[in-house]
Amino acid sequence: MVILLNTLFFLLFVIISQFSIMGYGIPIKKILINHKFINHKHYEMLFEFILGLIFLNLIGFILFFSSISNPFINIIFFFFGFFFFYKNYFLEKKKF
Amino acid sequence: MFIGILISKTHEDYLAYHFDYIDLIYNSDFVAGLGNLEIGYNYTPFIAYLQKIFIIPHYNFKLLHIPIFLIFLNICFFLISDVFFKKNINLIFFILLLFIILKFTRLSEFGYDYPAGLLLLVIFIIFDYSIKNNIKLSPILFLIIYLYSVSIKITSLFFLPIIFFIVLKSMNNEKKMKFLINKTTYKRSIFFVCLLTFFILDNFFKSGCLMIIFKASCFNAEMIPWAVDYNKISDYGLHVNLWAKGFYHQNYKISDPFIYLSFSNWFPIWLKEHFFYKVFEFNLLLIFVSLIILILYKNQLNFNLNNKFNHKIFFIFCSLISIFIWISNLPQLRFGFYNIICFYLLLIQLFIKTEIKVEKKKLVNFLIIFSLLFYFSSNLLRIKKELERNDRYKFVNFPFESGTNYAVDKSFEERYKDTLKFQQKEKKIILYLSNK
Image (cartoon, rainbow over all chains, first blue to last red; front, top):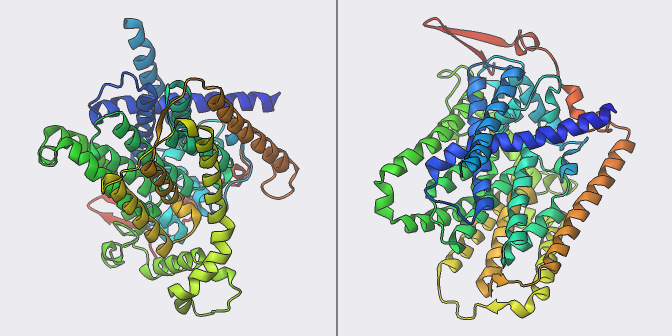
């Protein structure tokens, strides 16, 4: 039972991490790419992921540099990223 | 594909020093000169700071492999979406998709070489897609991803000729002069400059070098108290060079390492010990996958028969230089697999028009599902074997890797209190490790 719950949590966290990283990538993408990806959604998502990954990596370095090592702060970062993603993908869609 | 991340055994270097490094930076305040503690720490990837964010309450170090797995997953997701949902199939992407899924089944073998290589392939994919779909992208974007790959693995520098071509070509799109004096360019450069600055700072605080592979960029211990003795870095570099060229696999027939490093000595041994063992097999799979796809779609193929000297030939030339740089420096497959893939795909593109229209996608779907099933079953078999083994890599923490058992829950200061030194300047305290 514990193994099953752990596996489910692991899967869930992989999914949350993916969306969270993409969430950070969205604003960076808007700065770096001046193109509307109408028929290239998967292409846009690849950018969002890669740029989000780099951005979160920079945050990680700043945290080390500022001697901040707190797992609860890490969780907050994931929630923030997920919120950005949710805001852009779900709330934006609802507008139309 | 989630099954791929359920690993017990990691690659050898991970427990040797990569994991230690993440453990250290997590359990300590900022410390300069970590490279003095263990020479391998000077080469730890920048992505370690991202992995550190994946340490969350209760699960601690158990989720560190997620970012590396996600890099692989996102490439697969992009390629699957492109091949699966579009009417026109890009054969290059189709070949790449099947090849990646069939070849990179084991996350435990990835280390940090493969994620860096996969990011370089992302550059190739993005560029190819932008050319075919007439999407104008800023060269800075390619430079950012490239710099990030270099920050993960310095061997990404072998990709330099290819990135040079890509940047030049994307600058053409923007008109060179307009690109250089553009306001937007400066705005976009901020992200690149941030990444570059942090990468240099990371190197500097670890080793006292701005870029560890360039001796000229290193400070000595009199100027920077935590600077690593460069002789140690040179010795380590020599060891890696000898290892990559098969020095330790030739039963010391040539005992002098410097004599061994002459091309005529190492090349035949490398050819026998590494090329026919790993590189050839890699090429064979690449050729096999592409032959299957090209044969299946032979009726739809159009050949590029009138190839005048165009940008494609120059691109191939650049990838050939990349391969040459790789072979002459560190000719291990994991340091240059992306160069081989780029060269091979470009060669196909030179002779064949790779965009084809497929009416019925049953065959495409079948091949993708088959490759995914192969990925799933080979990982299932691996997990079974990992559950049965009896060494330190036995799957005792399922679904998490076993290496996490070796984490030391002690602060850095507690572990290294005898070797730490303090430098006090204007009330600011920098904690550092000296090489003495």
